[in-house]
Image 1 (cartoon, rainbow, N blue to C red):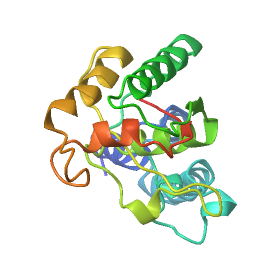
Image 2: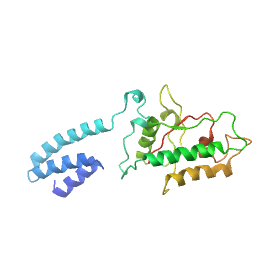
Image 3: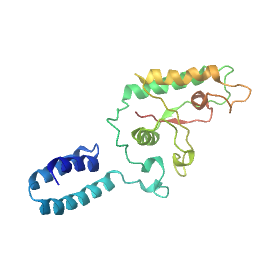
Image 4: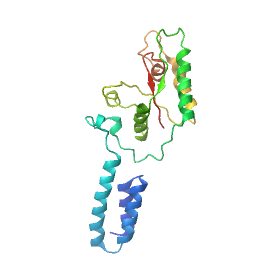
Length: 202
């Protein structure tokens, strides 16, 4: 096994996890040159890597009964970087959602003011890290015993304001006679009167 094949093996196993890459690169740099020792130690470090992966991608206890739940998904190997939703963006997202909810005509008789929720933001981050431009299965994104959730998804926007405005723009496709039909899922989710909490991620 030559050194190039070893490095390719390392990249395939460690993906985009810097800690694991550092461990594997350090280990391999110490043992290249002796095939038998390489194979022996590579297996040792592969087991170490697998153990670390299990810890990093472990599923929170409250979701462990459903391994396919969003909270239990490992990051996509194509994930390059997660973008933090800072305090300013959280306030902007909430402001725009609540403004559009208040602007509904005719007005809703029992429209809740949305509040930010970190638990929902955590689930949104887990799904964003999965790099799937589609909504997850409804049964796999709820918070057991607490919340039933809906999702909105945006791709390739330059700001949170543009994402929320794009969801609101679906108002032009909203079917007021049959609200459950049409191509306005994102808008419908924004203005659903019974929605209480909001959490976003990128």
